[in-house]
Image (cartoon, rainbow, N blue to C red; front, top):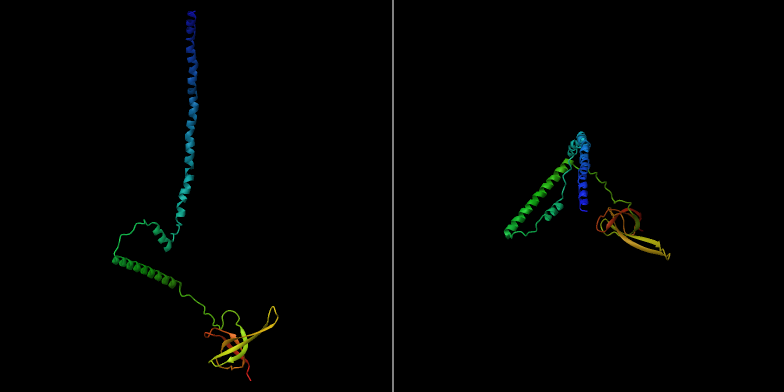
Amino acid sequence: MIEEPENNQNEETPEAPEEAAAEAPVEGAPEADAPEAEAPAEEAPAAEEAPAEEAPAEEAPAEEAPAPAADAEPVEQISRKELRKRQRSTHSGEARAPRTQEERITERQALRAKKAAERSRWREGQKKKRAARGPKEVAPAPASEHGPGRPRVRQGVVVSDKADKTITVRIDTARRHRMYKKIVRSSSTLHAHDEANDANAGDTVRVIESRPMSRTKRWRLVEVVERAR
């Protein structure tokens, strides 16, 4: 019974070389495939050469880049208000060293002188610009007795001619009330300019609206329609 296991062990030992031989081709298989794996490596330079040929096409925009540089953007114009705002935003917030009254007066005077010089330069620049443009041609406005629009004309009776070159005219009006249909009579007085003192009290005259000639005179005598009896 003891010899049987020994025979079994002797039978298993010769199989080991067979397994090693069977494994040998497996290890050699990658070697056979090695040339196929190296084939793409030989094609790699061809793939690398393709971008080299396209490189000039990519460099073309780089050569055109300087062209927009010729049209340089204008410098940003910052107003004085915006400039002061930016200066305040960069201030650290630290308190200034204490100064004497004389130092403050001197600093204030220097600041005023600086601002006055800036204003003078600005005015000089404005004068030069106006001189370069030349005198502005302004068409003379036609002299008119009245402003825009049609002047009003009224007819009334002179109630006073005591003032020099001035008459007081009463304008009587009569209109029908819109609701009650009753005739409502009213009157108003105005002062008119009479250059020749032609009208007398009681005359029926026609006046026209004109430019202001005094504090109360806004009318001018046109004609005397009827003399008083």
